[in-house]
Length: 173
Image (cartoon, rainbow, N blue to C red; front, side):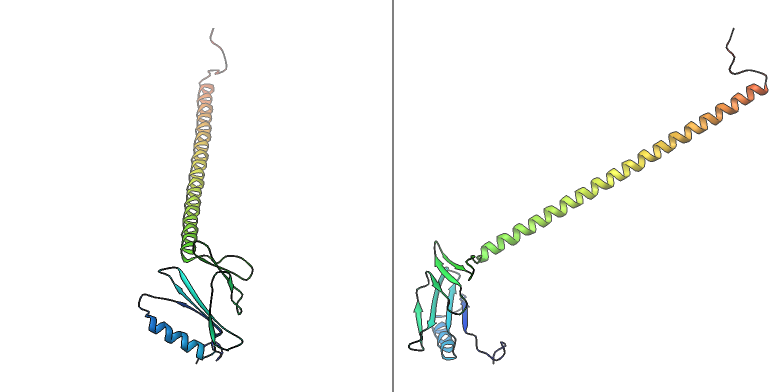
């Protein structure tokens, strides 16, 4: 009957949708109570309201609970009414709302995108620097080759002058 090893759920959290009717929700609560669930909580996302029922030890029947500062006997979470109902983990940390989760997810996505852009910019800068260094290396190599060529040409011309009996190192009278 149930995917949890054949064990009926002990705690039910029901999120209402616009199509849910009051009669349908009463039938669901009766079904879950009849089948042994110890706790049942309904959340209405349109109003932000929570309602809860917990099995009373004395009667074995569900009793409605005041949600402000209610602590789930089974899972240990605490409900607190502030501007809206807030749910706390057993360790006291607050559960984030759907809006907060979405905002955090969007912020994380923006951060990832910004980091990706920074990385791409750094890669472009590194590539530009690499190209500049390569251009400088080629320029130095070209200058070295020109110097070697000029020295070779100067030596060739000195050899021609010597062959013609002209001393290239002599100064004019």
